Length: 79
Image 1 (cartoon, rainbow, N blue to C red):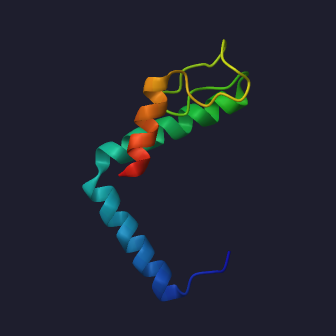
Image 2: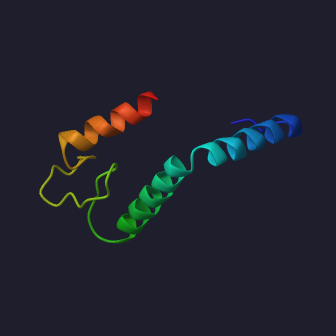
């Protein structure tokens, strides 16, 4: 990936600061999910990408604990 120019980096950072200010609930949810996934990677076994639940009885390549979590994740990605 190529480096951003200084002006582009400033604009990107300003946009991200404004987005974080307008969406504190989304930011908080993202940070909770991020740290839960990070902690789960260091422990044993995979976790759901949406809610962080353990995937003990699922396929080894499963990403979500249920179809509800899968659909919720998909719908959030659309907006």
